[in-house]
Length: 292
Length: 295
Image 1 (spheres, each protein chain N blue to C red):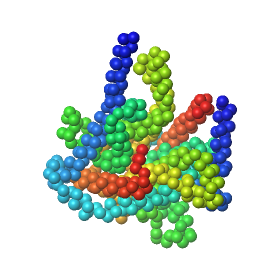
Image 2 (image 1 turned 30 degrees about the vertical axis):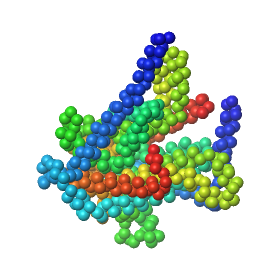
Image 3 (image 1 turned 180 degrees about the vertical axis):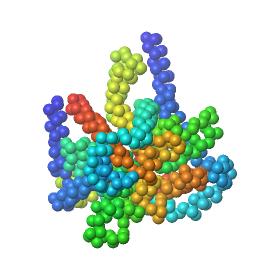
Image 4 (image 1 turned 135 degrees about the horizontal axis):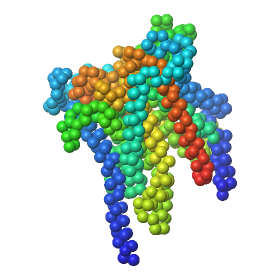
């Protein structure tokens, strides 16, 4: 009897510490390699580095931020415009795909869902290079568009915003399909029957029942496309030209080529700040604040 | 019991593909189906190109314009030694980071689902934040940390290379694993643990004999996702890899300016085939388990 009481007490003591012991290793890693680096980046964004090989010195150098805004305003605007376009197009393409898989997939639902993911087992860079081939000046798409007169003989698709936005849309499309599918799949079929009985018009039933219930998926999917698309530099690098550079290209160039760490760090922080504001406004608009 | 269950699920399935409303009636239904088919085709278009060009005999150094069909590339898939080395390095990085991230992430998930404690919301936020940060920022901030050893706790410094790549990969994988495993754990029946302990099992034994086997499918799913994400990662890796350590994506990026050997396409197609096989086996195993357990 007393032994079991003792064991209970011991067990309770252990139970109190267990969650923290389970959390510790993962969070130590995140603190050391995510939160600490972010603070290092913040510090760097306020440092000065007079020459390429100088060691950066912390000096409350707000001028880095001024430079980030004044020199790279157009790249910021472009990044968010392209990302917005890619997100909208991805939504238009992904919604019917997710809808058909969720409601008409039947027993093939898992197979169809697999088909959405399979293309992304090839590397991101190789897929983008494949688009470069598809949209290339000697490719089928360009010659088709030239034949039907949508493109002049001296016009191309590569090195245009269309190609960059197309690449961004493609590369992040599954991140739109999967969350929408998940939210559609959760809808109770009985609800759909009820809607069919109550609304004579099927379009109205869709608008009043299915669409509102799928909004959490649309919300999650839009963020999962928008954020990586706005920060990407690979699509603009392969499919665009000097007039389509995005903020990712600038950060990459400043950091890894020019070694101008302070300005690159300031650019990164301005970028995160804008992304956070957009996410906050967007979640307020859609009325969903649950990110997970 | 099983009979009742299967009729119910069959009825549910029928109501799903039969009576579901379709915007705009029959014609609208056809339009939506067509749009979905077009969407899937769009997803596969570059894949067709990648596979087709693995059979191309390129003119010059770039495998970008179709010339003529050949089996040569498939007969010498490992001809580009640097590319093969890069792929092997990617596999090694993915293996190590997946193991570490899966252990750390699973611990986090168990703690978050199993226990209620103060600050749970805040902890959740700290866990999700790394997933919402753009990759370029993750890469830039990690590189900043690696470049300034004085900021390191304990003043350890690593040269850019294998170690820093693995550190970075574990960092971005931990949150993915934690959230994936947590989603699977939500439906877990924790009273099974109580039952085992009531029958006299120690907490340790309960974990190994009851909890772990039941949550294993979720952990395997998370590990496979991690492995795929690690192998595919370019942007973060590009920042922290340094000049002499080259993973598969970094090699392709560096090479794409000077040459794109068709072996890139051959190796990608191989990776694709292996991944599809793993996915198929996993789906089949999942279906069989579902049928057996009647869930």
